[in-house]
Length: 136
Image (tube, rainbow, N blue to C red; front, side, top):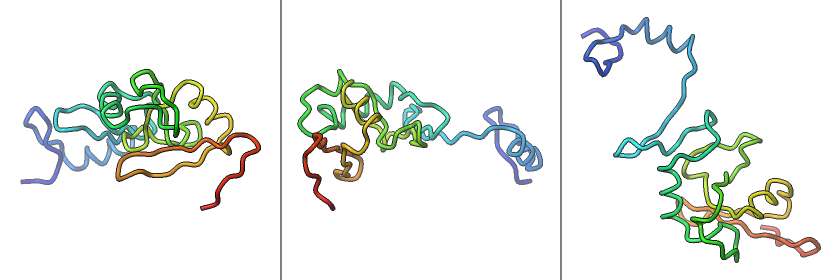
C-alpha cells in the first residue's frame, strides 16, 4: 500500500496531498475522550467545551482559589495561564474561578500564587494587599 492518509470514506489521500494540505491550511490539534468529546483545543478556541466543563465540575468542588466557597458549577471557567498571554484551552490547564477571582487574577496576577495539586489540578492562593508572600 502507498503511504497516505486513510479517509473516513475508505479512500486513501496520497502523501503529496497530505503535504500540500499541511502547507496551505490551518492545522488544529484537538484531543478527544473515548466518547469523541473535545478536551484539549490549544489556542484555536478560548472558551471551554461542554465536555471540558463537565470534567472540571467533576474535578473541582469549588472555585480554585483557596478558601473561596463558591461551588464550581456557579463559577466561570478560567485558564491557569491567562489566555490573553498565550494560555491554552486544554483540560489540564482549566479550572473554575468565581467572577471576582477570575477578573482579579487577570488584572492583578502578582496577588496570586499557583500550585499544582496532584496530576491534573491547580490551586491558587490569594495574597491580600500588604500581606507577606512566602517565597518558594
